[in-house]
Image 1 (cartoon, helix red, strand yellow):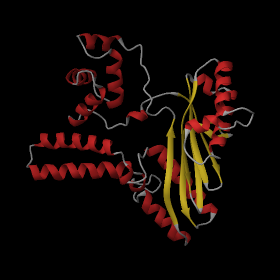
Image 2 (cartoon, rainbow, N blue to C red; image 1 turned 90 degrees about the vertical axis):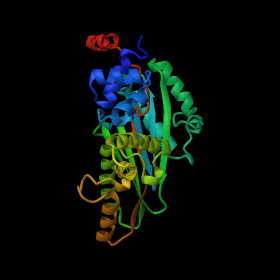
Image 3 (tube, rainbow, N blue to C red; image 1 turned 180 degrees about the vertical axis):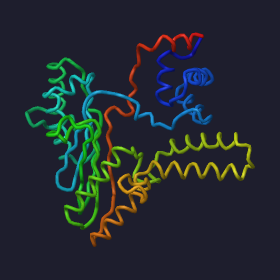
Image 4 (cartoon, helix red, strand yellow; image 1 turned 45 degrees about the horizontal axis):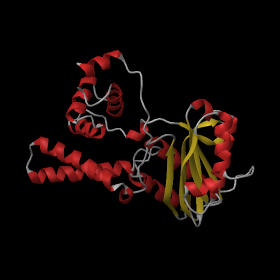
Length: 311
């Protein structure tokens, strides 16, 4: 009997782009563990290197707010997209984000306990919304970025409307430290924020990448290198090269800047600063994509896959 479900096969295919039978075989060999199956498919070159969070889904909205040289992003989830389109829900996300912008630390519990503009606390208003709208809602996370001198620039991808650029599906904040004029910082910040929205950096620089993620990539690279049959010293170089490539492609500062196509984001910032005759440094950012990292239960898969699992 299979140690996995039809939905697991579907999920693995969505995460990797692998064929149905390859996905089934990988899950069988992995004892139904999806993460292990993803790694196995990638090691065999049968998977597209996609990030899980870009495939997950949850409803709700991301809100962004900038006050002076400080900005905050907040994610509030709902059960359905129908609620995310509700004016009452949108007003709650917008006002909760504005409350978050006044706080000193990124603490969701403290945010819920904070005073809400219409009276009571954020938690009180959330409870009232759940009762009124009839659907579960949660304030999931928040992150603040700030600079001493410079600008924090916000960008919203898939905004709820042209008039509501503070609410949407992917919210980005870019923190630029420096003494360049406001127009230069605003234009540069928006370009970098749009880049981040599209290119999904995992950290500002290589040092900020999650150690567990790096070790997982190392294990995959080692397996690929071992299958090459090359001498051990060559395999070691292959592994280190793969890790450096991964870090470069997933750290914002070292990614090739989409607008330029040749320079890295860090190089583009330096060039812009030189042209402006000013100092500019990209010191922080936040990219919140609605639902990233949330596991969503799958249902109703094609009959052909059910047959494949049972075969």
